[in-house]
Image (tube, rainbow, N blue to C red; front, side, top):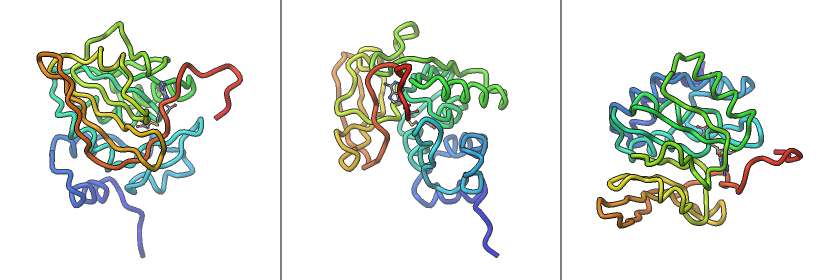
Length: 217
Ligand code: SAH
């Protein structure tokens, strides 16, 4: 009888697909993805697929979470800014690999639900913020690393400004869903910006502005 893949099955699949960093694999192993998906999809939580979450958004495919995390090359001393909290899954993975994660989301429902998951898991080094990712989160800038989990045509200038010299941002860029590419943006010690495309991806759009009172997903 075929059974649904579990956490170990997922880790094996990520290794097969080329994720080699054992610290990243261990961080993923520590985060129970079933707590981050809609209970209706709990049976699919450990499949390597994106799934719908509230407010018309999605929790990313584990391979993409692992790939982006690996490319960030994190260490325990770093301060990370995430744009697009969504379910909070990516932030939870990051929290095991860096000093502190600041994560910005435009939907209050999603921010609150993510905060409850972090509390339940005893994760104390994530700060959730309601705001507009296009302006980043100036109070804690600059950041060693920035990860954007929604796609923009161009990288937000505020985020480039809030990146430390020597820092790195990973962001999906592309004006339509079919033409997105995950891009690594490095800021050199002298402030020069170097971009490198990494992988074709499909993310929900990075929208402008906070959620309007009458906005529906
Ligand atoms: N990282 C998430 C997946 C994110 S889906 C996870 O692990 O589950 C992208 C998220 O970006 C959505 O929740 C969407 O509401 C949010 N988003 C889109 N535009 C935004 C903006 N301008 N500011 C903040 N969040 C934004």
